[in-house]
Each structure stands twice: as structure tokens, then as C-alpha cells.
Image (cartoon, rainbow, N blue to C red; front, side, top):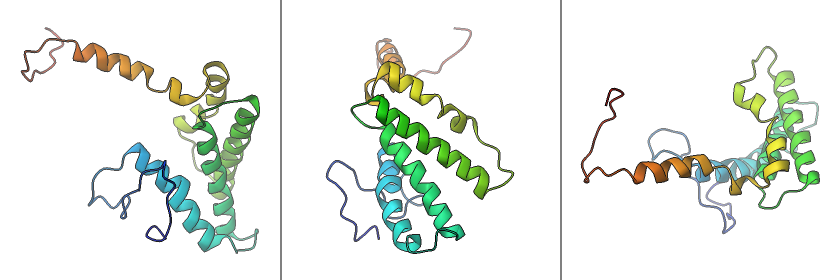
Length: 157
């Protein structure tokens, strides 16, 4: 499917052998394309025709909640309606995980995803603030004069 799928121009192409470990490390953009385009196309083709009561279709429907929540969280414009849709889909995905995989423990990042709506409502779209702290640290680190010598960090220095 990856070879036949036309990727929107604003997405980069995901590596053909995504996640096999023999190719370069996948970037966040690679994962975004792979999840929001390639996996959606492939999973719908493979499982979209299954009856809703089958495990395959339930896995597909649950994955689509995650894909939609991910897409909504990355919107460049934010509104209460978008935040509400994000939360509905994230809750549906998490509830689906617990139903489809009984006994699974949710990870801390899955819990934290339920706090994202507060940030979206207060701070707006994630692209405006998601990297602020890291960019600030990059600036501070780049402003240290090292005379172009590699150095190691010493806690006692």
C-alpha cells in the first residue's frame, strides 16, 4: 500500500520498511505519516469490510480513534469543538484498549494525554508551544563558549 498511496504534499514520506531496524531511525514526521496516512489506508483496506463484531474491525475502529485524536491534537487552529472531539476520541481509544486487551496497564503518557485538552484550551495549537522549553535550552547551550572543542559535562566543575 505504501508504494501505491499518494501522500499529501505537506507530509513527508515514511521509510518503506518502517520500524525494521535496518534503516535510519524514524523521525516524528515519519511516524506521523506512517500512522495518519499509511496505516489508515492499509488497515481500512484490510479490515474495513469486516463485520463490526469481529476483533479485526474492533481493532480498526479503536485505531481510528487514536489516529483522529492525534490529527486533532496537531491542528494549527484550535477551538472548544476540536478539543472536545480530541477528548472524546482519546477516551474512546483508551477505553477500547482496556476492552480489547484486558489486564493491560495504561502507561503514564496515555494518562497524560487526557490532560492535553487543558493545554490546548489555555495555550492554543501545540505547534506554538510544544518545543518552547527545548528551544530555550538549545539557545542556552549554544551560547556557551567551547572554543569549538568537544567537552564532557562534569557535575563537579
